[in-house]
Length: 234
Length: 298
Image (cartoon, rainbow over all chains, first blue to last red; front, side):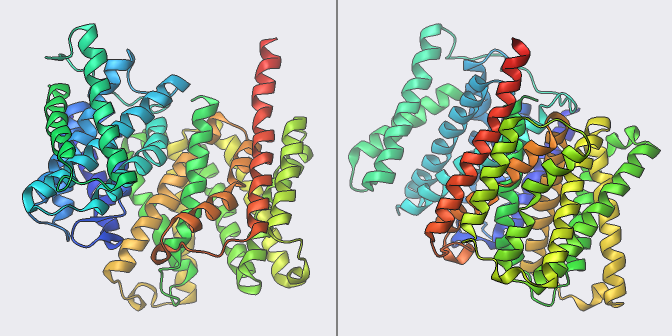
């Protein structure tokens, strides 16, 4: 399958699902119930950069059907990361192409989806805080549960079908290079630190209602997370 | 596809069908059931045909025949169900529809297929769970609607067993597209017979289109593809066992979802007790596979 076709299929799926659910608004003008969040991890795992780019563009085009604003730029990056990060992380832990044939692979899939969901929620809510200087706790909560719930509840069965032996979909190969994550130590430590930072931020927001306006540590951890996210992505 | 994978697939279908009531109740009352059938299946067939166009190369006359047969059984099931639901309370109709858990093993025994003790015990516990969640109330069943619902249940069981056989013979994607196309055609013919003006009578608002697309995509395109795929790798009884966990998923959804999206339902202890029994039955029946696997390994 050519890259263009992969790109168009992902874009089509993203638009179809994204626009259909625009009616189920959760935060007016910002977010809604989004089964489309099942697409990025699957598209990223199967088609790498092509899938991730289609998700970013797809989110922008879907936003034009009702929620387009300056914040859409965050949506592009957030959705790109939600697809790109699972692809990068999967091959750090597994030596085979993405599939859910074993319990270990299922656990790995759930793990990369959880990290990706925390990343998207953190990036969008912190991004909105930086752009508009307003903190929306609901945005974090809705984006996180939308991403986690749909990427596992819907993305997992879709990935199972696409990797079944009678479908034979062609996955893109493992990332050609990890600029930073080369050595064993870097491969083990950096993702673990990043996951820990995301967990601390997630727990702080969900359980203690922490926010970057009142809590300095949220801003410091967010800065560190951004650097680590870039290191993991290249 | 492993056993765990097929179970995940089947459970996702149950999730889709449980969540579909949120969107079905958003459809206007005057929206005919035939229109629903024709439009959702038609859109699903079109979407699948575009995505999997290359698969049509594998289509044979046999696949067409089997797809047509499945669509007839499916249409009969949906139409009988519609008649039955109109004549009795939704909870009673839902209980009768769940009797597939009893009908599928009975039909399998009739077809001389072997059933494990775990399967039989699991089906029994699930049936008990359904009775508990219904409160053992039989007063609402003395209507003609019961006959229609039992007919629908029979069709559903035959569909599960036939789909199980056909999915193993043919490409699940192709047979699913053929089946959806024929079901859409049947729905459209019935819709035309019911109301000759058909399409012109509907005012397509943004919300209506959104609901139709969502239902077409999830309850038809996705659910039937997933069903055919999983049936290729699993057996009919396992499909029925996982489908019977629908009351658990419905209970969870009504507790988790906000009232605006169909949640906030009344919590009843009978529902919880029924859900626990259904889960226990599903686990008991699920152990059959691992037991057989262990015996095979020995």
